Image (cartoon, rainbow, N blue to C red; front, side, top):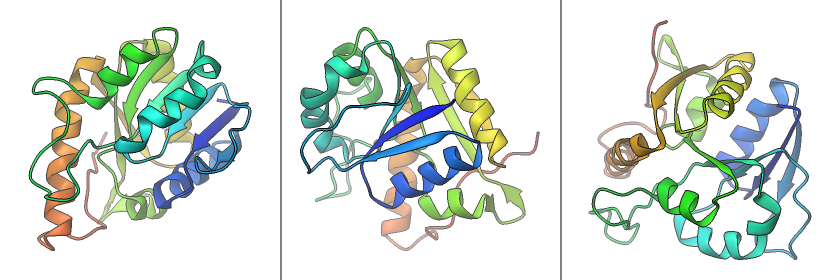
Length: 191
């Protein structure tokens, strides 16, 4: 990946930007609350809360055609921390893909915390990013970039698996918010 645009400027956006920079990509950061910019990356990361996605797509959908779009959101009800906000059996990534029919939508980074991406480890294991999507070339390219930055990547299957990835993300977030696990917890795999 030679150029990546990250929409969002929070902790996850910064950590993901550092991963792509370490992999040799040029990274454009776009603050969603400012005047819309031209998206220059061939890959676009939606590093915003799920509640902001509709507005982001409203501003940038035409510019995302032909690009790989990485959805990192967890559609969690952050007021109650008791449910996902997408229809049962669906996922945020699938909803986004339906709105971006000319893009390659991937689900990734939603089962990692910013701290584990920055540290590149979880305990003695390398951090692992789970990736779901229907375009094998886009998944392989993302995995290669992640691995070039010193983090493991694991193909979790088709975009339909985003449903399970979002459930895992939901569980991790609720456990961390409830102080049952650390914000430095997550997935590490041995290859």
